[in-house]
Each structure stands twice: as C-alpha cells, then as structure tokens.
Image: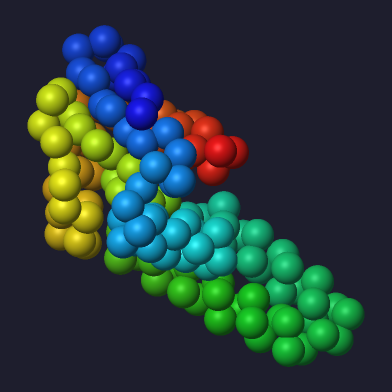
Length: 138
C-alpha cells in the first residue's frame, strides 16, 4: 500500500499500489472501469482523439473502423455529459482508506462516496491520474 498526502498535507489517502494486491472481485471492478476509460474515454480530449481517428479511417475508406470510432465517441460524450468518469471509479476501487476511514465496499454507490470524500479533502484529478498511472505500471 502507498500513502498519499493532499497538497495541504492535512489529509492522508492510502491506496493499494498494485492491482495485484486487490481481491479478485475488487480487481474485476477496477479492471472494468479501467477498460471503459481506455476503450471509450470520458472527457473532451478523449472525444477529440476519437474524432481524429474516425476522420482518418473515413479518409482511408475504412468505414467499419470509422463507425466503431464514432460509436465510441458517442459513448465518450455520453460519459462526459452524465459526469461518469471511469478513471475516477477505477481509482476509487484502489482507495483503502481516507484519513483512517477504511472503505471495504466497492459497488457503484460506495465508489461514488469515495470520490465525494476525495473531492471534499481537495484531492485533485492530477493526483488521481498520477497515482493511477503508477498503479498501472506495476
């Protein structure tokens, strides 16, 4: 496990520092959200990347791939508009505790509670993405 302190140093977040440390069901939940994040996306940058790929496929007359990209782009936009962030949820699965409060549940509602708590203590998206990237490396 790894301890992360918020920028102001007032709060402590303890996460599993490798997906291999997760229980099998917790790993499945983490993997689900990671796959959605990587496969579809969740923000305007992901949306633009999908559009660029779709245009490239259309120009090369690879209509099947263009259609797949446009479908993924549509889902990406839906995720953004619905404020659904698979990377946030994947990270929430990794959270063991915040300021000593242990999180044992990882159903969707419980993960949203973890995300709300992270937001409440000032944990940033940059903090989340950096630490999520570190976990992915292991």
